[in-house]
Length: 291
Image 1 (cartoon, rainbow, N blue to C red):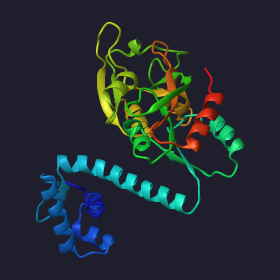
Image 2: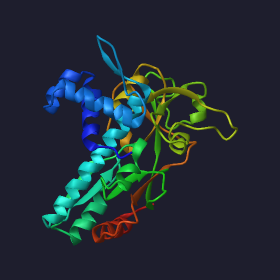
Image 3: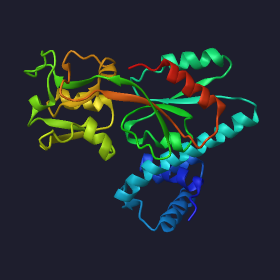
Image 4: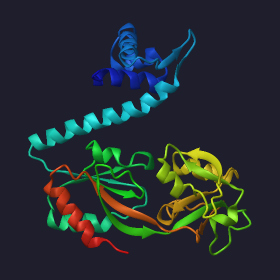
């Protein structure tokens, strides 16, 4: 079946509000018409997306997953429209994705020196979908952290990053100059929510060299959630040092991790798309890379 973007927008509006009446008002359609569209979408998919009672509306497990995917599809559709309109208008813009704390300055400066009239748009990307915005065209090129699912992507390693262990300031090891993940054996390690297995193995302190598995702590989706869990004593976490430096807290300690290899930042892009601007940006990033 072909997915109808209008039905996707209708679904997202209901899923975000969990109220058909409010969603209908936001969409400027009648509630019966909206309900018919959602029922038709469920028939098209062959799944139930919402649990409905006379009192409330909630997402099913299938609905939760579909909301995640529908948002990405709508974003990709909007990105495609924006790109074709820019091209039709004669505009040439480079969209650069970045992960929090990655150093984009040198590559941007090098590229802009050769292309002073090309606007650059920056779009933040997340650990759970690093590849997707590159493959669906939301961004032209992106600063990612390895490992990344490289299927369909060209990847240029750029520079290493030291990693920090994030602890409560009251932790007995918080004042050390450096500690090992092994020193925290038995303490829960916070998990990167929705991370691919390769990412989780690196960034959630996967099995030790002796095969011992870490204790899995709660999963987090952003840094504020991570810090909240750490402050509450619910677990410890691994972060790149440049990210840790962005979030100083008096009740949080960042201690260098000395028994794990450094992380690595890379530049990634869809090599099947022919773009002079992307090629020139890669050249600028290659010239600026370090380590």
